[in-house]
Amino acid sequence: MQMRENPSSGHIRSQPVNTNQKLSWVAVGVVLGSMISVYWPAERAYAGSADSNQKLSIATCATQAGFTDAVFVLDHVTGRLTGAAYNAQAGAFTQAYGRSIAQDFGLTEAGTFVMCPGNLLLTGRSGGDPPGLEGVFIAELTTGKVAVYGFGYSNRRNGVPPRELTALATYDFREAKK
Image (cartoon, rainbow, N blue to C red):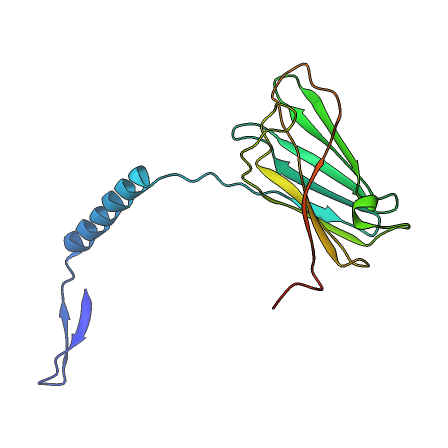
């Protein structure tokens, strides 16, 4: 029972609560929520990941829809960016990538880098294979430059020879217009 105050007399009186009405509203909410969840378009969750320390950075990038990611490792000391794409059908890394990014940044000694994956949505082909959905974005502190690298991906089980990563674009983050 629910207690309510009668405003005219100042007395508290009890009124029965209609539990059937509450249950009806809960049922309507469940049915509507279920209908919305069935017909709402599903969106896949994509999350590239990255981590680093003072001498090494690692990032994963989406290759193609429905396939496994590629992993990229940047050695800060040598300025060498290497990567490999895992093929679940073959149960092995079937593609290798590499590039000396120290030259791209104009470095003669170890750089101070940060690296992360990002969407590229390229439409061309790299060596006959479609480009990966994501690429690797790298920033270097001493030069103030940011560069983005792309890669081609093939889902062939037997693998392909190692390929060089493609430098797509650069910009100077210190000179960027405000």
